[in-house]
Length: 219
Ligand code: CTP
Ligand code: MG
Image 1 (cartoon, rainbow, N blue to C red):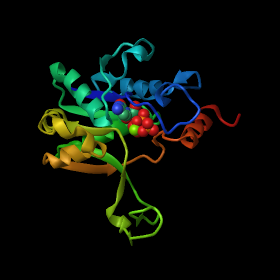
Image 2: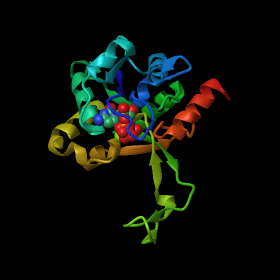
Image 3: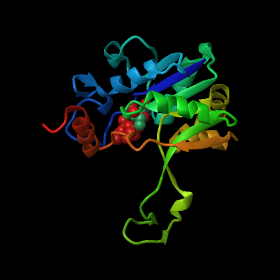
C-alpha cells in the first residue's frame, strides 16, 4: 500500500492581507487544501491519506488520519511519518496543500519513477540565468543552469528508508532544505522526475490571484 501525506501545518506568512493560512482560504467555494485532497482520493495508487494540520482545522478538512503540525516543514513531515507507522506503507507521497493543481497522473507518475530508486521528486529545468550573490547587491558568480532544477511536490519516498532518515537526523531537521536533502544525506537514491509547470505552489498573493483566475476566470 502507498500513503499520501498532505502538509497543511504552515502559516502562509508570505501571503499578505489574509488571516487564515493560505491552504484554508476558499477559492471557488472550496478551501485550497480540498483540491489536492480530492485528487489524492481519486488516485488508485494511494490507499490512505494523512493530513498534517492543527486540531482546530480538522473538522473542516474532513475524515482523515491527522498528525500535528511541526515547527518546520520537515518536522511536520516527521510527525506525519510517525502517524503512518501502523500502516507501514511501501511509498509515502508527500504533497504541499498549497499546490492545488496536482493531477492524479502526476501522483502515479512519480510513484512509478521511484521504481529502481529509493524515491522520486518532480522538478522543472531552470530557464532563466541564475546568479550567486552573497549580499543581494552584486554578482559573485553565474551558475550553470544545466545542472540546476527546481523542486516541486508530490515527492515519493520509500517509507521505511525515509522514516529511518528522520530518526537518524531527528535533532537537526530544521537544517534541511526541501524534503529530499535529508533523504540524499541518508544515502537514498532519489530520481528526478518531470515536473508539471501547472502544479505551482501558492506562495505569494500573485500565486493566489493566478489560482483564483484559473478557478473563477476574470472577475
Ligand atoms: N508546512 C507544514 N508545516 C510547517 C511549514 C510548512 O506543513 N511547519 C507546509 C505548508 O502548509 C505548505 C507546504 O508546507 O503547504 C509548503 O510550505 P510553504 O509554501 O513555505 O508554506 P508556509 O510555510 O505556510 O508559508 P510561508 O513560508 O510563506 O509562511
Ligand atoms: Mg514556509
